Image 1 (cartoon, helix red, strand yellow):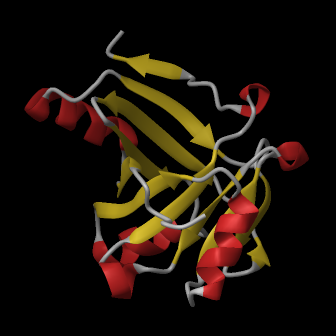
Image 2 (cartoon, rainbow, N blue to C red):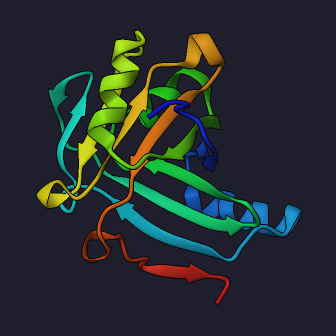
Length: 163
């Protein structure tokens, strides 16, 4: 299970408006096309923020780039770690995400090494999950561990832009 960061899968930016920022990145840097989706419960279950059960909702814009994915996360309520980040720092890089084969084993290993889990969630039927590690003071960024869900639980975009 170690190294924990074998390859960065995605870079995430916390934003006030995923749509506006996606359009700006497309216009100014040519990034896109963008897939828009909601990250929420359901399908996520057992959503925890600092160990306490708490639902939240995010609007997400995703652009696949060569070798990496760019994510934009817009909080839709005032309870997520993304909302906290925006309130404290404004828009900016929130985390890097890495794919792990076993989310529970990765969390256990990170905690064994002294890393605190800020937020976590599971996909139904223990088919994967995610965890954001409190590594900002040490590494200058949060690290997300992600075990992708089985295909039936993968999130479907509600919009693609530009078409």
